[in-house]
Image 1 (tube, rainbow, N blue to C red):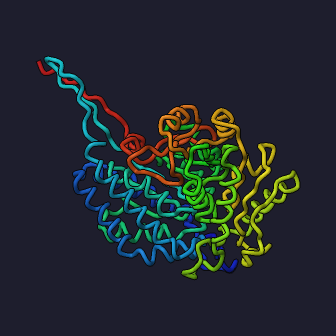
Image 2 (cartoon, rainbow, N blue to C red; image 1 turned 60 degrees about the horizontal axis):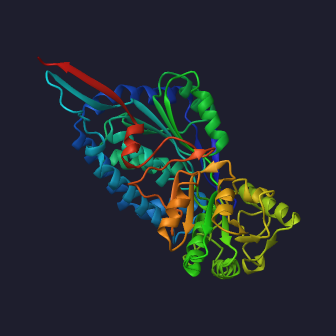
Image 3 (tube, rainbow, N blue to C red; image 1 turned 135 degrees about the vertical axis):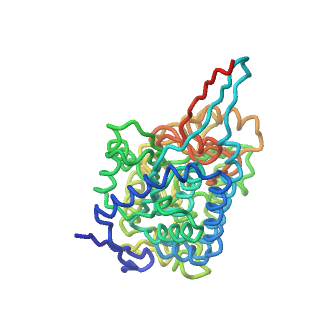
Length: 462
């Protein structure tokens, strides 16, 4: 018997549409088709594989209005901002396509007389991509493009909040003329996901989601020797030094904290500010925050939409309430954001001061529109607090002294360190993390390394 699930609108809390999970027989057939198609796809010339993947990207760009609407309806991002995800998808995909020849080229060691020696990257086989709802195209494309270009076949399991995104990916690859079985969007229950991961049918899993979800993935594959890329939680910090351009830092950090209603893996969730510029920074941060317009994501004037679910908003509300009870102070009048109502997914942006690391809002991932700002005495205290976290995805330093930023970056426990920017993925750089943020690498030439295995060729010729 097929199981049906409903997608609830973040904007109205009503049913958008329903979908059916695939039954186990259909899942098994999709996996078998991917396995059968993989050798021929891997044998297809690299230039042809790249051309077909590029054509799928072309299709998504050409249908950007449909893509943007799917994002806004499914997860609540304002329609004024959703097209930006298409631009980001194209940037990442085009870059990964552009470096494929270099990333997949043979590695030839120093010549040795009488021998031919080189290392060659080969496809792993069938790659399962488990994608989240918060950046439903961007997060998925990080693995889909290099996996396919490398000669793997791909099964995409998208979030049950954004199944239409998987359908759009399928339409794009179908339009591009990929052979049957090379790419397949599959709508799985947790039980079937666990089942195929424990079988011999999947050769790699790329997962973006919660820490608990990452633990479940590792448990599912624990009896098998396959790889997993796990991009999990974050509690990304920023440090505003005494020499920072305060207005510039505040404007950019407000965006880093509240874009996508704070539902970003690398969004800013805590800020440490040097005591000499603390008051100036906080005043400017609050001023910029108060200019946001919370409302219907279909309204072109809205730049802050609802959170993805009422339960998600309630989680953040509970963090805020608890912090206030522990002595924190909220500096933004919620009445300025009339759409923010209990029992809905709409939540006003909150700026908290008088916070400390005894409060969950400063240590536990919020994934919502709330930020805590702490005063620090200098670099040493800032680094200590930035590293006082179970997570390590990104961190940012705001300063006019690049040498100081470089010295701080070496001490900060994180996958990426920014100076004077935040909340951005450069596809030329490795996207990775430490601690409970997970492990593995996407993007850059190292993203191809994760999705291939190395074979050594050692031929005696004389």
